[in-house]
Amino acid sequence: MRIIVFLIALLAAIAAGWYLRARVMSEPAPATVATDSAGILWEPLSMEGAERARTAVQQLTSNSGPVFANVSAADLASYVYVALAQQLPSSAEGIQAAVIGERVYIKASVRLSELGVADALGPFVGMVSERDTVAFGGTFEVLRPGLAQFRVRDLRVREFSLPPRLIPRILGPIRRGTIPEGVTEDGLPLEIPQHVADVRIANGRVTLYKNVP
Image (cartoon, rainbow, N blue to C red):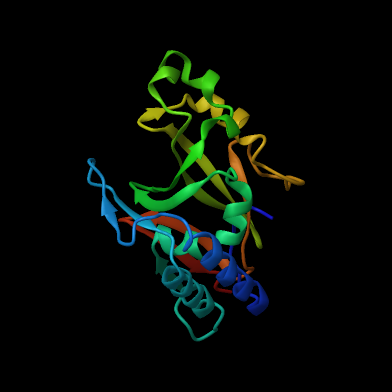
């Protein structure tokens, strides 16, 4: 299962809800949104966010419904947490999401040994902890009906941005299963509904566009 999957089947939505409640609600995470020192608004995953995103995606299935839907990064991540959790390191805690510029970022506290980033940090490795904050930032690209990818453009450990050339190497162990044709080395495959034609990021929001005949 991919890092992000838009769940529209009822049984999948129910399973996501129970998994999200068991994992996220049991972990120590901020109960409200929080702005960091750079003024970035980070939101924790939540059951309420998952429901808001599910409703927004469902509206696009109607011929008479809207042609686009806006969701927050945290709501989208909450909605698809079952798939997200299977791709993140098992030690991930306190998962949050934000939109920064034209990228979606997902960050969590993880054991760095699970990502194998020590070599990439070089002389800075002594400035981070065994467990520290890792953030993935990227954009969405729809490759064909039913398939998109999340291209990781920025990978940070605490405040250190890793060289872009190292991103494919670090993503290698995370990309599980068969990688569909057309997915780039810095991309994570996403299964999407056939009626979603485009995903754009701007002004703190993620906008899903419907495929209009």
